[in-house]
Every structure is written in C-alpha cells, then in structure tokens.
Image (cartoon, rainbow, N blue to C red; front, side, top):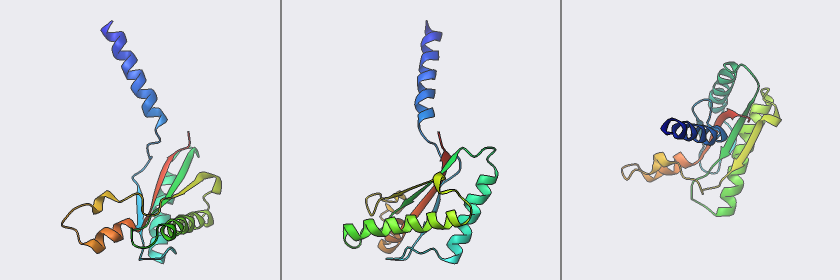
Amino acid sequence: MKFSLLLILICLNFSVTAQQKTPLFPKFSTYYATGQWNLQDVQKENLKTYVMNNLKTLKDSNYIVRIEGHTDAIGHKTNNQLLSEKRAASVAAFLISNGIPESRIIKSHFGSSVKNKSGSNDFIKKEDILYNNRRVEVTIEPAN
C-alpha cells in the first residue's frame, strides 16, 4: 500500500512538472536606456550568441523562444506598455532576421508590472533598480 501511494505521488508530481515549461537554458536578459527599444550592436551580438549557441545543442527543433519586454515604473502606464511591446518586437525582429522562424517565437510585454527581483535590495541605488527593470528576457523552452 505504501509503495502504491508513493508511486501515485511520484506520477502526480511528474505530470504537474511535465506541464510546466521549464526553460531549456538559463534566461538571457538585455537592458535598455530610458525610453529606448532598439538593440545596440553589443546587445545583438550577445543575443545572437545566446540563442544560436544554445539552439546548436538541441537535437530536434521542438522549441519556442519566449521574449518578454519590460520597463521601469517611470512614466505613464500606457507609454510603458507600448515601450515594452516595442522592446519585445525589436528582439523578435532581430532573431527572425537571423533565421529563427517566426512560428517559434512568443512575444509578451508587461510594461512596468513585473519587477526584476534583483532590484529589490535596500542598498541598491534607485537608478540601478530602474535600469534592472528596463529589460527584455529571452528563454528557450520546449514547445510541448
């Protein structure tokens, strides 16, 4: 009886875990100056290196690239939402121009609603906290 219950719990845990889309590689983040959304050359190189090097290690093409745009809390909420959308679109356009199929890309934009937790320390300067939230995060995840 104990063995059966343990097996059921393991199976339940596996099914819940299998439904979550755990990134295949660590998250990549790139940061922006206030009000900016265009990728700079160094951002392009770092992004290309991250995506292309990680995709080389995959044996199949069953993946998605999730792109999430964010802003700091300075400015109007509507403007921040639009800016985060432009940031995500800029990264997506760059990846598409470098051979990633558009069908493999999922874009989201959150404005200032999702804070970067690394900026929550009282000893960090306010400008650093704002900078850490002006970002796009990219993850490569299983498609299913």
